[in-house]
Length: 280
Length: 306
Image (tube, helix red, strand yellow):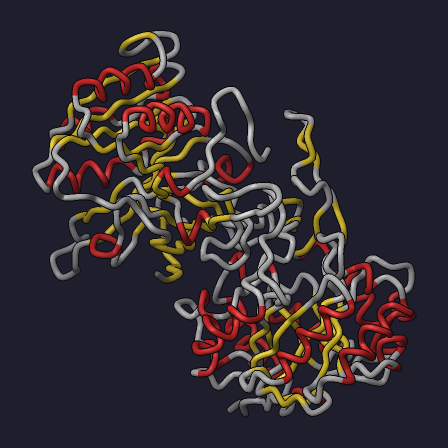
């Protein structure tokens, strides 16, 4: 965990509104764990003021620029343009300076005894699942990726997962790729076939809540990776908290997304009762 | 060849190796930042605000980014004084940096009880009385906006403390010098100003306020001119030392507050943007003074050209 003053190696659009950025990141191949994130500072001025949190897609090495030099370690992020910060980020080029704080947070826990693993991603929520899939495949486990999105543009990097040996299933709202409908229907079918599977999910809150309901009913262990507004990323400002399982208005209990998460066991969080609301 | 300028400052018996310390609530309990900077290089370490009992804080969303700033409504979430002693003090004991404990109460009685406990914690060198949090209904700002209430809590806390007492003031008043004079007369050793400015942010797509609490405290570079004005006013209104805080992002910002007569500075939002910023600020102050041929920072403090 440190703050690296480093440079962008590559930044380009990979689908409408989605970008992929490689950043020079010595130490990341050995230190970054599946599910961890970075806080990226893209400019030295005050607008936008805060860093942005991004899940780590993967780490790797590039060949040295000449024989005498060591290989270059990088971290790769995939991001969606959502506001002023990501818009500015999309204009960066190879060689531009950035500051990288990380790797941060607590990632996925892998239980070695479990044979079948179901990874559920919604849109950009696929990002933290890649390193998890990589690790599980390396361990010889059976990994299935269930990806959902509005249209085919929201379904990213499927072939990269397949190259790891992951079986992939796609559902889109408009049927432009894979089956028509929600990824949660796919999950229901797969859990019926593999009732002993462990489930890992990242995506919009509504998807996570539906995944949680299905897993809870099936008794399947579920870990979720959460997204939150963050200022510091290191557990100091307490701006990114989420309600814990024992939370109530009378006795509030909050967990810090950046330092206690971003990956949580679903049992540790407070979920909306189906048909009801909590918190917000 | 440049001489390294002397950076040590003395605030009413509180000796600091340099004038830079974190603003409470932006630095956790210190340990959170130990990977990113050398804590012993700081002038002091200021803890998150402590209360008698643990406090869970406000509902979410708690933060919103704004133009050159941010709003927060954390709601003074903290572990409580007993867990602080049990879980946080052992780490702080390993440091050579003086520790300043920020604290608050829901009632006058609670302020006194926490002050009494802090008096007996050896690692705590000085205390900072928070009468200025804009984000909780009880305590905090209720005391900070009324000069008589502010004086009463300062005087009660003073009577159970021998350690240096810093009082942190809110800018959310018509005339900050009235409260400043009141707490000086009630026995404050040092005044720290300013806390955050009350603000609001609106999301026009969802048609909701961005913070669950509605209002929040504005911090960051956006508030620096207001903070400078108020520090200037307070320095001229009282004779006790003043700690300047509000929007300091770099050494030049800190030097502005010091030139106005603040004896030390607190760095807040900058810690969230760059966890190593305070050490960069200390280095920058030293380099600037050296370039100016100033050998002692005390020759810079308050030395504004008329």
